[in-house]
Each structure stands twice: as structure tokens, then as C-alpha cells.
Amino acid sequence: MLNGPIPPHVDPRKLADRGATLEGELPLADLQRLCDPLADNVGVVRAKFVFERDERRSPVMHSTIDVEVKMVCQRCLELVALPIHSECSYAVVKEGANTQSVPQGYDVLELGEDPLDLPALIEEELLLALPIVPLHDPEDCQQPAGLEEPEPSEDEVSRSNPFSVLAQLKRDPNV
Image (tube, rainbow, N blue to C red; front, side):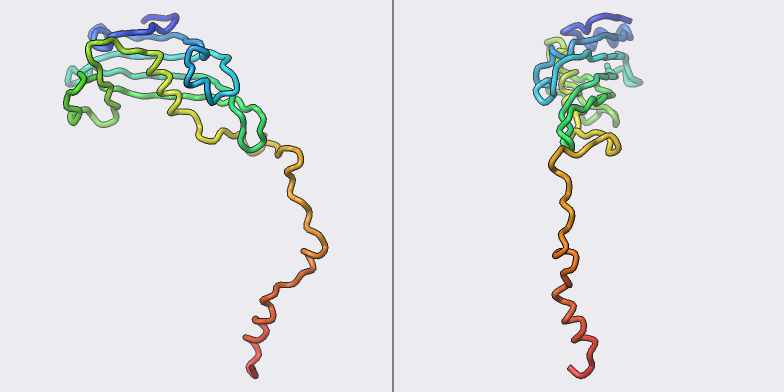
């Protein structure tokens, strides 16, 4: 098991042969595309990768990624801290290979001769895990000032339904 900073590039096939586990941290500020929709880039991404061979002797990789991000709540427009958790299992295949035989439950990770860029993979998974509309819990969320529902005026309360006359005509057998 390797602990410490996440290495920038790895070869999943070699790590699967050894049954290796990588566990470490990555500064959130290093993931520029992920930081774009966030309110700030302060924090640390914790990631764990387990490399192994499956029953068909194919290399597979299991990832667990956790981070807490700050976004703007779309209900109250205040900052909300959101814990983001992503778990994924990948079947590592050669670039251009047939992916029909990949077991169910695995995402395909096509690799050529170049090593895998782990920070880029982490960033992609976290982008997919971000909420589309960040919100506080309804109990914790306050409406912004000035957006309260106005009280109905007396005219609105006392006004009758304009179709009530039609209801009376429908009940009257002489019409």
C-alpha cells in the first residue's frame, strides 16, 4: 500500500499484477476544471485505488474518492458545504479493444501505451458526482431577504369566483 500524495501517472496493468493499493491526498486547487463551479478551491481530495486481476485475469481498478466542496445554494444563495463521494470500478482494456466482454458493473477504461493520469481521472469522477443544483437541507435553508411571499390583499381574499354564476345556472332546472 502506498500512502501519501497521489502519483500523477501510473500503469494500472503493472499495479494489478502486484495487487497494489494506492491511497493518498490531492489538493483541490490542483483540479482546475472541478474548481470552476465551486465557491472556493480550499480543501483536500482523499482517494483510494485498489488494483487487482479479476476471475478472467483481466486488470481491474476500484476507486473511492471523497472531498468536501463549497458551492452556492440555489435556494438561499448562501454557501453550502457538500460532501462528495464517488465509488467506481473500472475494467482496464487496451485502446481500441473489444469492450463487449467487460463484466457488468465495470466502467471501461481504455489505455494505450501511455500511463494513466490519475489526477485527471479523479477530476472526471468528481465532476460527474457534483450535484446539478446545489441546495442546503430544507430545514437549514433560509429564503433570501425580500423574497417572501406577499400577504394577499383584502380585494384578493373577498373576490368571488367568476364561474360561480355558471355553477348556479347548471343547478337551476328552469334554465
